[in-house]
Image 1 (spheres, one colour):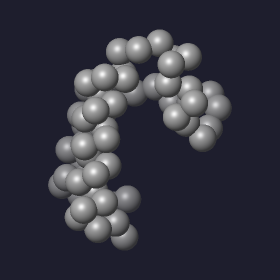
Image 2 (image 1 turned 45 degrees about the horizontal axis):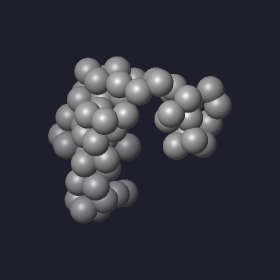
Image 3 (image 1 turned 120 degrees about the horizontal axis):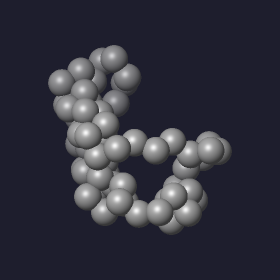
Length: 60
């Protein structure tokens, strides 16, 4: 299970990704992923994930 500090860090990273990276070209972000093809989430999907990590950490 993740700690609250780990979850807070993940949420912060997702907010940064949503604000700064989600708007960029796929070629800019591909080296951050360890799978290919790398997944693409919309800003709304990222926000939903942030909310889920905040409210339901046991379902990870």
